[in-house]
Amino acid sequence: MKKLLIILLMPVLAMAQGGQGFTMMQPQVSAGFVIKGNLSGLKDSTEVILKGGNDGKIIAKDKVKKGVFTLKGKLSEPDIFQLSFTGYTQAVDLFIANDAITISGDLNQPGSVQIKGSATETDYEAFKATFNPLFEEMRGKVQLINGEKEPAKRDSLILGYTTLRNTVMTAAMNFVKDKPASAVSSLALFAVMPLFEGPVELENVFTQLQPAARKGSFAREIEKKIADTKIGMIGSQALDFTQKDVDGKPVSLASFRGKYVLVDFWASWCKPCRMENPNVVEAYQNYKDKNFTVLGVSLDQSKNNWLQAIQADKLSWTHVSDLQYWNNAVAQLYRIQSIPANLLVDPNGKIIARDIRGEELQRKLKELLK
Image 1 (tube, rainbow, N blue to C red):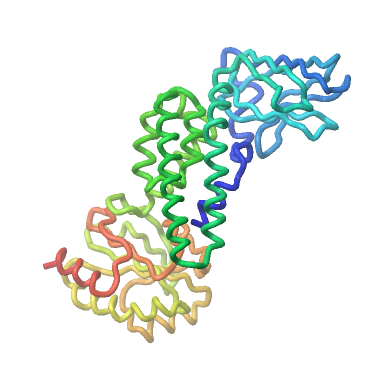
Image 2: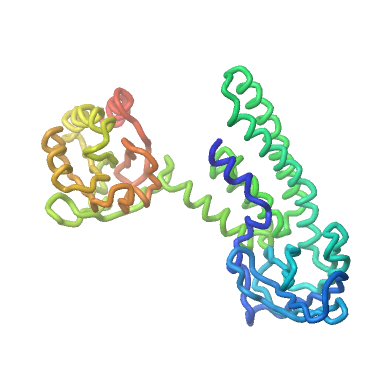
């Protein structure tokens, strides 16, 4: 819920990924964009600047003459950009590609500003009209849930949130189904990304979009999310790594290929890890002669504490660490957020179980190593 609150509180424009989606000169783009503006409420000589989203990189600029200005440039892909006016707090955000665009209206009356000539911008306006009210309602429900202490009322609020979540997801699915070639469909999926059950569901929907829609900063964020959340999933290939053992010698996960390996994330300072260690010792002793071993990855900072814990807990398998605490490179690689944690890797390097402890670990190994 906490993650959801953070994401849904971000305004649509803030979700733009900024300067990743354009370059001033891209030879593969045959034509550029032309933005012709005619806005009242602007003084002559006001500088009009088209910028990338979050990084504020300038793409094009011009000066107003009797309310008129022209901006030209080339974009490598559609994305959200911002039109700002020196000396004015008002700004216009727009989702454009290499189109011929006209902007008209009164800057002091944002509702009167019209952007024409870009199919992507039209889709963007449809997106905001559909989803901004839903996101606002969702933010309100999340805030109520976070503030409610009485269990029955909280449960009722959560039920209402779940119903709204389903409404939002239905709207998103309908949007991308209706606009499979629009880059705004990637924005729609990006906006509801936290609401998907997992990366497989997100990927199934994303890959149904046409290639034109799977371009741009939002598409890249979705692809990154899918790739990141697949790391360490059951059924995926374990990512190889190398770290130094207690003697300073490099040890790689790949060197254990051909065996079942329990990659065990722990630390000397972690009480739950130390409490679980006797169970791991029992598993190791029972199956070490049956093509099974353990590779301990420690999130320690002190080498002395690490070594003392290995000796005290009788952990007689291979151990590695870079002594970087939560910044341990292997923990970062596998997106480990808490310990104890583990991955059971089969002889072919595939992850076949995660975070199995106690009797569950013993049962799994007994099933595999009869």
